[in-house]
Amino acid sequence: MLFPIFSSYTPKWRCKFNDASSLPTLGSDSATFSKNCTVFQHCTAPNTIEFDHIYFHSAALEFNWICGSMGYLVPLFAQIQFCGVLIGTLFYGSLSDCFGRKPVAMFALSFGISMIVLSGFAPSWQILLVARFFVGLCIGGVVVVVYTWTMELVLPEHRIPIRSIFNWHRLKRKQLCRELFRDKGLRRRVLVLWFMWFTSSMCSYAIDLNSSEISGNLFVNQILFSVIVITAKWFLIPFDALQFSRRNLHQYSQLMAIIFSWH
Image: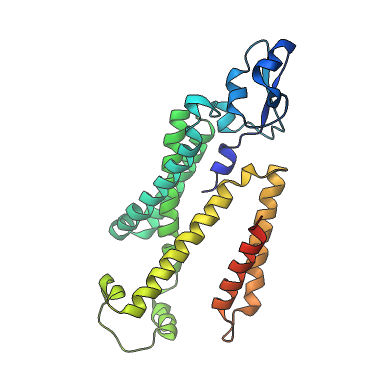
């Protein structure tokens, strides 16, 4: 799902002057590495564009999604994939109810893998965008269907005892979605939780998808991001007890994030 980090990677550039008379025309910024589209568009022959630290040839470099009329394809690439994820989460859930979890899960996995291979060998950016849309569609199916299917692998004779451990209570009537908004206190909590989850997801994906803009080695930065997330999750295990206050953890964590991000 975070593949756009690498597909949209674009290193800084500068104009490599073969003709010194062009320097005053482009300005002094053209001699230093930056992401100045004016330099990129006006650096013409006999001068050439020189990139800084090309770790690999991303889709942005291969199909020239850098500046000008093609520059909009960089954000569009991620948008199309995440639109596929959104549609897949809605579409595959209904399919799995009609045709079963296993066949739909196997289809989502196999078709998704084939689309990943196609995106790797796409001869044009149009085919690449279509392939990544279907990859996102299959990711939505995997998130919804495969997780449910693995939970249903528990033998039927063990499902009721396992569920009764956590749900041993009187049977209540089925509640509707509007019940969440009738009570003032419950309505306030739901709205706060929705806003928190939306903000958390937006910040998380914004940081991940823009991590390629951070200075330094791209791969080292991604490893550091992963290590921090894994360490934080392992750190929470010994504190997840009855006396553990998740509200305090959340509030103090947000406070620390605000303090350290302030500059």
